[in-house]
Image (tube, rainbow, N blue to C red; front, side):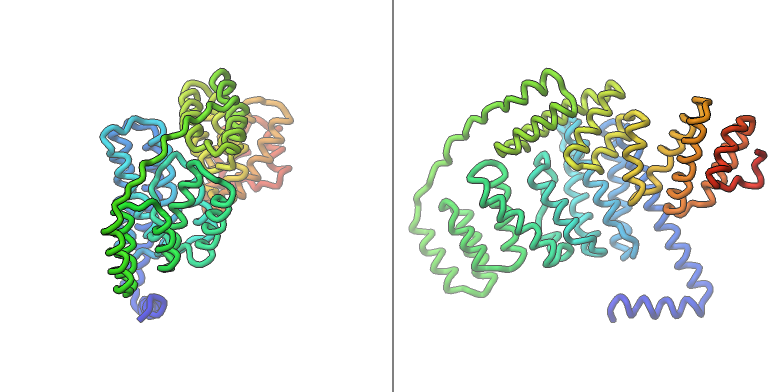
Length: 424
């Protein structure tokens, strides 16, 4: 029977069997706790050393694999995706000479692919993530389209193909074209288009490995006579073409400005110029590493890093950078306003810090703004499913600041119900 039918039968039986129902509910709670603990490990892993980081990420991956192997119906893709992105960023900042963290990344990508197949995300959003990694990433993680093909579906595959075709049409050479050519080959392979895949392979310079792949593709498709004919031609063809000498890439004019004054403005100027010349992938890695190095030294530099990432429309990376490098509170609040839509629970500490900071100013305008932020915090708690936690927090806050009558008045004026247990 299919999974949906089995689920219906199990649900019906659980309605009649209190013990089974309790067992299922306990398992659901346990899985939720496992996911929460995994997110907590990622939050604390970034402050650890290489060895401890690898260990904590390994624990997260163990949790993901255990839940996937158990057939969990929870949506594990967001946690798996976050783990992949986190390890990728960490590899840009550390010296992973042992390759231990890189090994974790390969495993994380495999688990993310499994999670996507189990609970497919929006196919076009998944396609956009793959395209971003391939064309704008630092060179990792390594993604095999075949692993994500089922989750991508026709819509996701079409979106990737559209971008690949555009790059091939616009880029006569360079790293982006090489990436597009590789993706075109993987698309043909994932879609099972034998003729297109053979044509792509045949257009490459003659090499033994390419000829062998063509033979394997034809044999797998049951076209044995064509495979034999191609193998015969390959055996008589011993020409080898030397690879053209690597072109010396000119240093962008804006690179000097960035090196002299690294910040979000010079970073984005460097990006704009490098994108036009198709050299942004190489430039981005070193420029971003410099911004992260500075971000670890001061709050102002951390803000610059966040603004640079926002300028690239990398909101998730900007959020992680703000948390990791302790960006200024105004910057974190700005990020929280957009982050709270999809990830409300993550933004709660930011809004609480903002409320406390406003109260310390001890003036009417700040109290009024604090009340406004409390209304926003109440909404965020509701979205996160922790409305009771907000009531408890508000009660404690009012008790601590009960002598600030103007603050209490602004809270009431904002139509925020003060818990009866609080003395205001």
